[in-house]
Length: 357
Image 1 (cartoon, rainbow, N blue to C red):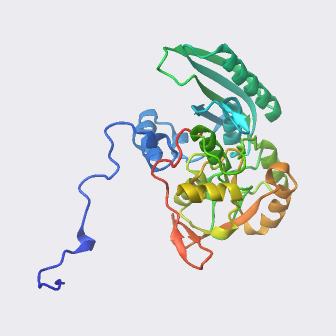
Image 2: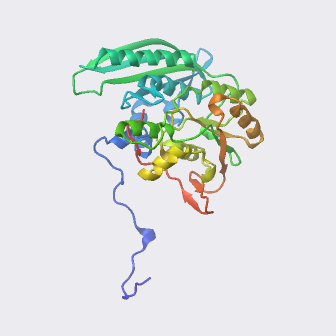
Image 3: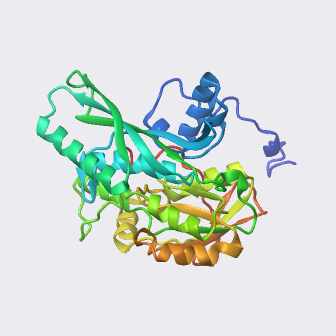
């Protein structure tokens, strides 16, 4: 093919990139954002180094067998700033984040460990408030903090308080929640309005006002999952869309299952204050973090009953069907817009809003 000047035009299909576009010699903030950079860090460094088969399964918690019992096992670290925000605190996040990761395997958390990393000079009153919030959240979630650790780092080498929690819980017989079980025709359900936590954190961190106070949705989801499993243990996969938001979770599931996902954009519940804040700041609510929501892929035959059970639970009252798994475009998520068009909902590279958990 030649261009208008008669010269040979380049063959675009034969072009190759000489180096990975995301090749990073140093860790950047995006590596902690729950998107493509985070996945590369795990796949290229941690999984090969550790060599555990459980790491090859992209779920929120590992499923392991011990003494004949199936256990869910998860760990998470929390570095949110500020430590206290509308609707919660780092203490609430430290409990609910790990409890919810276990719940996405169908397990109700039984025990947590808790590690505090304190910066020299932080007020003991602040540590007390965080510890009290963590204890109250554990009691509300029905989980016991069974062991822990404390370290202190020099002033300037921390951000007041960091927390790590790990948790274990029993998986009921007959429950098998993993993305590989997703099949074309599965209905995609989200448990309520999305984007609330990320916008709540950003508003207080940056001193932004949107006409109404936006509170985090931080909450333990174990009870909601139990209500769903009581309808049918044959749920295919659950995921809590935290870092990277709903978009990251859907992309992870699509990639792991080898199916496509179609989302009806107008069906995704987005509260008006979140929509307004995202419009002003140029953010997409589907990429904004949540801390008290889940997304479920459910066989179509059970979808109505599962949705009714969710609506009957306080944490699922706003549940909505937002799409389905399809055979077309495997591994890709697309959204049907309100104007009748289609757009690709890609995996985020890093994170729109850093330090949300």
